[in-house]
Each structure stands twice: as structure tokens, then as C-alpha cells.
Image 1 (cartoon, helix red, strand yellow):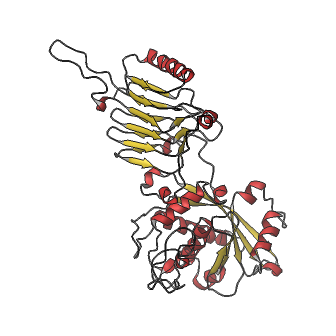
Image 2: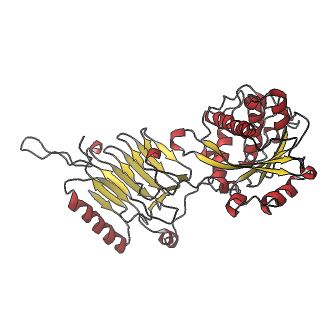
Length: 441
């Protein structure tokens, strides 16, 4: 059964023709479908229909509460090693030093995949940040005058934007990569800052090379990578906890008295708190609010840091197929899927924001599964098309004189179901919806 309501006549006609073409192939398959206004409108039609766009501006809705339903966002990074004129007093361009720098980044990625539990606050435990750093380049700048980077803005403008050392930085490398400036220093103490909250630009780091000289080539996990995550997450949208509500996230747990300011010395195990715990805790972590804010920024909802995300969502990747197996899943964030989306029997998914499907990808709703597009859309954001939504179903048993067959809507376990409401749309799919028989086992 197909139930069509309040669609424009031209949309109804084009959809019926599409369904008929599909049903010529499989005439016994029936699926449940409920459609509301503007369901199959292209972007311009949605605008003209004056249906309000979904509000996906609440950052906490982007937190990876269900990690398997959040594609990993890969962050492009470049390291800039500032040496003295003779190349001394910082990492050199040798296999050993390059490997050490690579291992620091690898340690940060391992921590992002296994965050610690927080000892304060009410956040649920989120173990996987769903963020990965991709080290793309290591550059070397032998200039004694800038060895200790007296001004990070000036160094960034000179050696990144203007490429004063003529290292071949492309426009893509300059403006779609996060640049870490490793300043020279004789002190093993750590330090750093970022060019802005949620900003593509630079991160200034001090102390890696003295730490290496003092502790040796296996010291890449001894504190420096945790401090690096602290500085990196400033670029990803986070402020210090002791800044209170500044940055729109957590209030510091150290602020015991309302009349007192939050102290800079931390007692929590949060990455955005200072030692003696903070990012130096044995097992630091991030809160739901913080991780939601990171993914909010990386999804392009605020700031410029989204420019550094690897654009790997345009090409179909079968191994990135996402499967929904639980009931009552609700997506309140913008998602860039890289493969198919499958909704299993007994599972339900409500989509309130835009979901990108790559060319060659499809959405499969298996018998007994349910998909509700409530104000959101399924689309392709790479200027291409995708394969549309497949509603899988089985024909009801034939009627006999003693037994009356159940209709397809009376037995939902036999059908894949799709409901579009509040301007929910399916865009850039030549055949928006098809009804299909499940493949033979």
C-alpha cells in the first residue's frame, strides 16, 4: 500500500511512475509508506514550499553517544619544526626524529579512541571521540631569528600563508590543514596555545624536543601527547573548564563558591582542566557537551575548523556501511555517511537533520524496520546522485477459505516502513523510493 498525501500533482505523477517502474520488476512486493508535503522536492522546491528547515544548531546533539552511528572525522595536520640556522636545537629531518613525531600523533589518536572516565560532573561516559588526526606533512624552518617563535601570527603568515621557505605549500595545504608550530626551547616544560576557538590556523607548542632529549625515543607517551590534545581541542571548539560558561560548554567543577572565580588549577580529570589532574591525569576524558561541541564545529556548524576535515565522504566505501539495530534512534546532527545505511527488523530511526549519502550508496529498510524523516533530508552534498531508499517487504500469504491473509499494514514485521513529515525530503536520487523483495538466503 502506498499512501500519498498533500503532494503537488506533478510530484504525485512522477512518483507513481517511478513506483510503477519498480513494481514491474517485483509486482508482489508491498511496503508501507507515508508521505507529507514537499517529500521529494529538490532544494529549490523545499525553499519555495516555505517548510521550515530543521533546527540542528544544538551542539550537544552532535555528541557520539552511539559511536557506531558517528562517522570518524579525520583531521589533517602539518607539523612545522623551527630550527636554528644550522638546523640544530630542534627535531631534524632524520628517520628517527620523524618516527618520534609520528608516534606522538599516534599516541594522541589512541587516546581519542579510548577516553578516560571523568571524576566530576554528570556527563555519561563517552569512550570514543570519533576523531582521528592525519599527519600529512612535516616541514622544517632553519631560522635562528624565529627559532623560539616570538609571534605565532607572524610566523604563520610568513611560513605558511606566504610560504617564505618555498616548500611548495598549496592553497589546499595552507587553508585546509591545521598547522602545528613546534617552537625551539631549551626548557623541557610544556606550553602552547591555539589561534582561536574552533579556528583553522595554527597551534603553538613548546617543549617536545627538550622532552625527547631528556627522556629518549620511547617518551612519546609521557605527557606531551595529552598536552597536545588539550591545545588541539581548543582549535576544535573547546575552552578551559575554569573559564566557566565561556565557550558554551561545561561550567568548571572547581568553582566551589558562587562568589569565587574558577581557579586555574584543576581537580578534575577533564582534558580542558589544568594539572595537577586535568590533561595530566592518568586517564583524562571529555564530556558529552565537549564532544558534541567538537563534532558541531567539525560538521561546519560554526567556526572554520571544518575545513581541515578530510573530504572522504564523496566516494562510496562499502566497509563504512552503517547499521541501525535498536529502536527509537533519533539523529539530531548533520551526518556525512560514507557507505550504505541499513535499518534492521525491529529498529527505527528518526532523522531530523541532513544526511549525506555518497554516490552509489543507498538506504535499506528491511522488513520490520522503520525510517522517519522528520524535517531532515537524505541528500548528496558532492554535486552527485545516490541510489535512493529501498523498502524491503514480503507479500502477504494468499487467502484460503479458512484463513484470511493479513494485509501488509496489519503485519508491520513483513514490511519496511518509511514516513516523511514536517518537510522531510529525499533529494538528488533519480529513484527516491523503491519497493523490493528481500534477497533469497
